[in-house]
Image 1 (cartoon, rainbow, N blue to C red):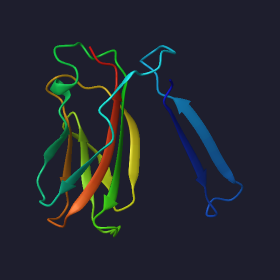
Image 2: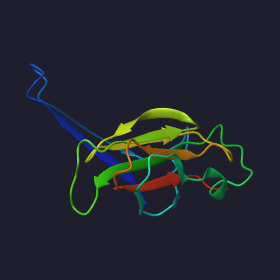
Image 3: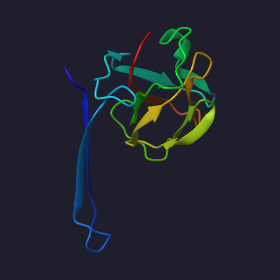
Length: 141
């Protein structure tokens, strides 16, 4: 069964924009073959302003050459105890490169090329408690 992602963008601050809706099927790199494996949907609670591994790639793709693979990661900052604090941000790193900050309620879905020693890491901006929801789709060995 295929995994799909959809997004709708609507804005009243851009003249003549209206809206934009797109969907995609998550597939292996360069093919129409559905991505077949997932880490499962998980939550990670963070309470210190220090970098930690969210996804340890070596646990998913042991010894595999991943240069031609197309993994996908979804991460959402859901806040803490049903409070979504827009001032509580979490930096996201892929292969040790900062790709952005997810503030309360923010989310991202992006492709990932990573190998055994290149993890997906997160780092809260403060010591305030925050919870991330995440799932990774990948082609395993």
